[in-house]
Amino acid sequence: MLLLEKYGQHLPLNHQAERFAREGAPLSTSTMADQVGAAVFALMQLYRLIKAHVLAAEPLHGDDTTLPVLAKGKTDIARLWVYVRDDRPFAGPAPPAALFHYSPDRKAEHPRRHLAGWQGILQADAYAGFNELYAPDRQPGPVTEAGCWAHARRK
Image 1 (tube, rainbow, N blue to C red):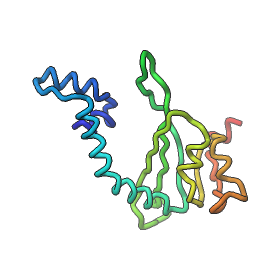
Image 2 (cartoon, rainbow, N blue to C red; image 1 turned 30 degrees about the vertical axis):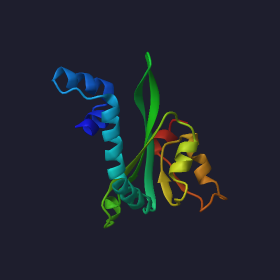
Image 3 (cartoon, one colour; image 1 turned 90 degrees about the horizontal axis):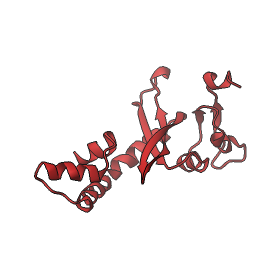
């Protein structure tokens, strides 16, 4: 329940603690944070398997979307990056999967780090942060750009 509300409903732990207290089950935010940390640790192996599966694909779709994050007295705009493997349109046998990464900003270092050991075909928007991936001298090899028609026609 802590994970669902924290990550699925974007309900901060302090708000959850207030609700639990109203329901007669006081829990400190530090106790809940420990529980979230333990759950994340337990799920890390599953994350690694999903990451390996997604990055084993030659074609990937990459994108990012804005993510509002509560900050003291304001809302910051962070990013949720997603890399999708879906071989079904090409009659591939591998099941589709998505790999998500969070970042507090949209700097080019994030996709560069996310895809550091990967090479293949990347279908993405015209975000300049992907450009370093397309460099011919990139190691372990260049990524082939598969541009997006919706973004290409805007230029």
